[in-house]
Length: 326
Ligand code: UT7
Image (cartoon, rainbow, N blue to C red; front, side, top):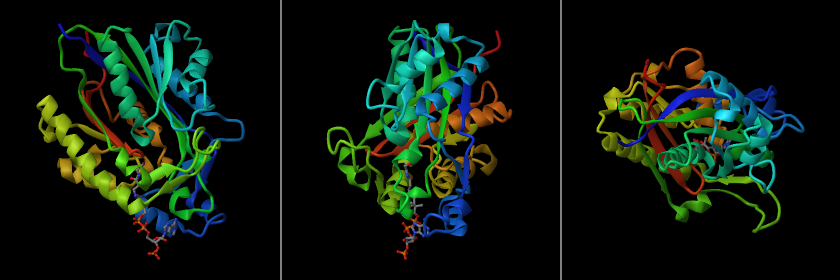
């Protein structure tokens, strides 16, 4: 019988420091009105001096373990999706492994920018199905503000820092819970519309985010729509059966467009972009964690996750959350 991969716990962590749109107007030529109207963003969290991506990831992981009633010794695989690792190497995942004391796990990073979480989820699911372990910790963690050019108002107002984590557990029992479908895509010819102008091999420094916003917006609407259709067909589930859309949080206009396209009521979408801004690979698990912990998402709910970002890379997953009552 085929294994099924359940999502049995979630956690999140945000740095304490909050920066409002009004705060940003002291540094760049922008306004609260412009940012809110074009993106839905009102504030973002920002790491403190010395606070690392692995610190955010560790706190999110601890909450997810607690939520799943597991300890770090139960984890076989740790995957961290990040574009802002602590160091060029070793992986942030191995730093999280050390902080957690998860000595029996193997750990590595996945880099697919804003699509990182859906990529990491699918990679971890595949490893579990391939019998490389029984439980995985999948984390999206970013100190994305470290990549911003604070003189470029077209990008610096859009991003924030944070981390979210989920626990995946393998089961052989036949039921309708767990990851039901997933699809991943990329198109490297679109590199120039969203990239960082630095890196170890290209320049030797970290670089800054550069984006052609309107082009990215256009591709996001088109590609998220088609990848969502793809996973619904794969799972043979009508869009109307989705209980919650938990999308990447880049722009409220893209999120609302996807809600209309799926024909979902407005209150069936988890929106955190106003509070968190775009936290890249962290945005989906941050949103998911908020809606699980405040009681909106319950065991048995069907979740549609989708994200797109630099590469371009994009993907989607359908997950029936939690595990059946035994
Ligand atoms: O996570 C990866 C996926 N990323 C995304 O999905 C982002 C997709 N793109 C977007 O969300 C939107 O394109 C943006 C929010 C980035 C930009 O919104 P837009 O409605 O496409 O604005 P625009 O780039 O067309 O700029 C409109 C105007 C320009 O002025 P002019 O040329 O019309 O005079 C910009 O210079 O707004 C100006 N502008 C700003 N004004 C105040 C650009 N940034 C700002 C700013 N404050 N921060």
